[in-house]
Length: 579
Image 1 (cartoon, rainbow, N blue to C red):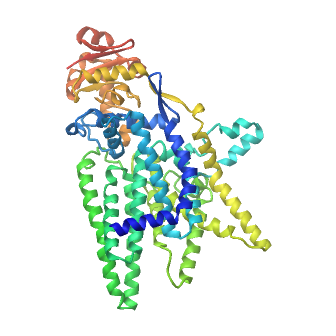
Image 2 (cartoon, rainbow, N blue to C red):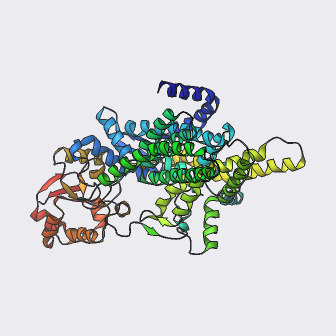
């Protein structure tokens, strides 16, 4: 192991300039973003991006569950669907919850790990890219293309700027030019859509990238002892992904599976021609089992403990050829052109050129099989929708974009190489054109992301937080509340109490059947005198009536006033003890 650590130190020193460039650009950018993405002011909690305002309410709910409850009660029920199983990948929020137990504030417990994860992700991406392509320039450019991901939406920006030119448009583009509602593509830039707001995705991709990095290193390692150790660590990282981020687990399984199957097939072909290669083939099988066995055992155990049995919807996954495009090839091509622009044709061209280059090279240097997995993943994600909300397949497409980014970086760098002829000048012009199409829309989104003064939204106000914490201190941890279904409902976020039915968009996507429960909630509020059996059915201890409930339901408050005692109240909310 000491030899391995020395190798790590040597690699860091060898690539110190590249890593320094990544850290002082992308590293500092994301450190600034995460340090300001959420904050308290005058007791109120604010989020400085709409995607964080929407997504981090869920994460705060789960973090407070881990922070405020004993371990024995962490997984008793789902906070958004009382009685349901908590199937959401919880690892990132469990870590933050434990940090709060150690004395950190909730903002520190959320932002500090995020900064660590993004720095580890950038480092892992660079070394993985270099392991595959053997070029620092291409590895760095691949990361840049990934982070500035988007399609040709900048064309609409140019039209808007041309019709009404002003400096403000450049410093804060007025709309998200990556969003295409027609295809349920809600945000196209991966940092603004995934890395910053989706905490499970950030940790999951970080773990997944390092798993693939160790796998590819071990495949190329000549030392069998080091190779086996790296395979085991890689397998354990892959195996933990079901509780970190399930889409990253799917991506790593497919990509690593394609790598192993491709190399396995190649060894068979070589062994038929050269019997002396049989020994190398057997050695490869033994090594790869060091990855497969721990990954399979750990992921299976975690799946059956934390996910199996928690999905109620029979149509949770479905087949949909072409994903959200109309069911014909031209519509599908048009959809991906509008979403990703030149990325797909350029990735295909780049892969072809690398295959040709590898065939001409006597000593095989590039692990081309690595790229096959991203194309397989792209195909599968265009056929199978893995959750009720089609948009969630974008997490798989983000993984695909990472692999494609390295391919396109290869072609751009090759086009840019110094030559003197007019033809070579044209190649450089083409490289510039490709970078414009690949990156400008994403750069516009990254500009929008760091304009905190334009993107600030209140997530919770001081009175809501204080009231929810008062309720938490004076109720049992397993008490169930009937409330409105707002995504940032304070009793979930700050009271660590389960509610009958939370935000329906999320609850459905978690795999719960909500039709009957939705009708029952309406019935209890509207006809409480007829709903005592429903209150008992859902083990409801408290019914909340406040402004949020009045905006969502028709409520017979008179019956509640006359028949149930008020357990808690503030200026606009009453909580009745009903059981």
